[in-house]
Image (tube, rainbow, N blue to C red):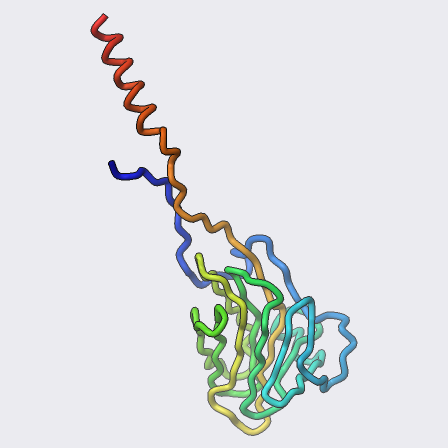
Amino acid sequence: MAALLLATSAQAAVIGKADFVGVSVSDYEGLGLDFSTDTPLDIDGNTYNTDTDSIRYFSDFGGTVGGTAFGLGTESDSGFIEITLGGSYNQAGLQFGQDAAGTARISFFSGTTLLNSFENTTTGIGGIFYGWDAGADLITRVLVEDLSPTNGRILEIDDLHTGNSAVTAPVPLPAGLPLMLLGLGGLAVMRRKS
């Protein structure tokens, strides 16, 4: 007899800020960092690395990309910011902007496995939120990288969101349930006969 299953599945999908469940937000406010700060850098349990071992922290773009006064940025023309999350989440996202025309990529990983990536070709500071719900997979790392370096171009991030939506695996019905249903059916037939 085939086992009966109650199943719900979560599909991987692009999400917005309002779609996060149990959200934690790193908004980079009040960190008191220098304009140029060495990496790796730990903020709210997440580790930030860059290609130059240094990250920018300043207030003149944070308000534009994330609605707050501060944000983080790259130091080099072809830089990247890698965020190793302090936990495993099936939801992650961030505000992203760039101060000059070009292409950048935001990628979500589970360990070294790429789950999804987005490319941004917005000219200037875009202030776009990129969020990913990985379904049953877990996001452990986010990478923001410059794909078309131009002189003096800076990638900017703000408001890192992490969360865990309700993901449920198939739940088998109790093994005795089919037998119980068969017994109830038999009782109903016997009651009709009498």
